Length: 103
Figure 1 (cartoon, rainbow, N blue to C red):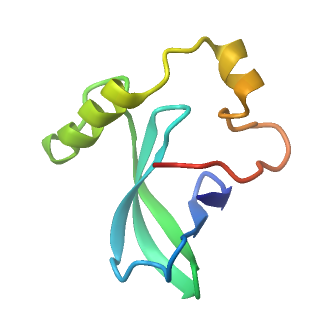
Figure 2: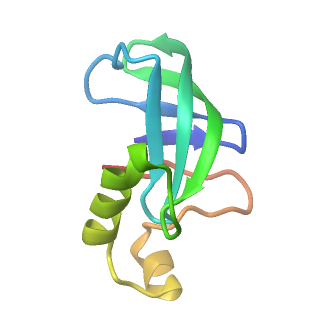
């Protein structure tokens, strides 16, 4: 789950202790933005990652992320912007974002 994020990185909360991977792909499912991220810190089930590169899954992505894009296209809800906002699945960009579930 994304606890907090900015242009530069994100604080993620895991159900178990945070993964040992130093690199990962963080996908904001509601917007289709994917961020290559590098581990910075961790405490228990939370970890901080710094974003390296950003990709829009609605457009072409590097070959190594093609499977992620395919999964996102197949599994994303087909909702209009107002329906996403009403469902609580959309990240608010004004002010401080709340927790957002990611898959």
